Length: 253
Image (cartoon, rainbow, N blue to C red; front, side, top):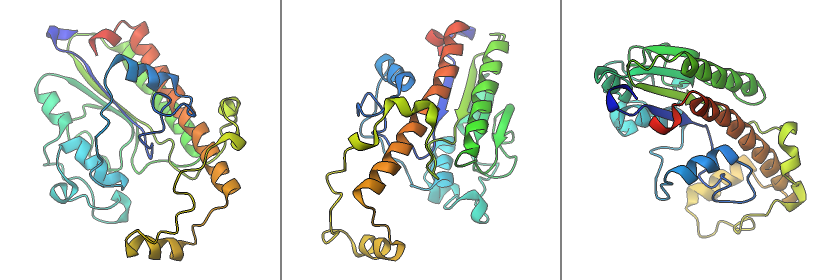
């Protein structure tokens, strides 16, 4: 630990619901994340500033609300890039003497991560990679972050980010993790048959317009696929955590 200052490691997953964690819901197989939960703390009342990817990420990077960052929609929907003059956790820690790395999904503009304070970028995924294509991209992120950790010289503390795409839809079955799940045993949510009569008009109208009614079997299929994808990203996170341990960095991070 350089200068008795701890390293900082940020792990991001995409469209990963807070309950999709074995430590919370035993129907999920997530040993790596469960280990983190056991070693640290879970913030059970934490909230996302906006459900869309880019605005939420702008809050993570700056500590501000999306209406303050100016990123109020997806970065590839128009002029919604994060201004390089914005305060950022990357620049703050870099100015404090930390070596900074970002690897994986960015979604905050084209090639502006370095200007916002990340000295190194590896496998920078500008707008994100979804579906089965995300498997290779996320594997590369885990590989590149692990390589950085193995090459780390310890002269200065690091702030490293591993930003994964999974379990972002479209949903698919990851056969490597099918043994942990059974479609037939996926439980239905308690509000599965809610007629939305007590919900805001926007919810009722949107549900009708999108024709988003699912049969019980269709829901179970989607939920089953989602679980295999969550287990896949957990495995990638496990690769990075194992590297932290093998390099003797885990306890100082």
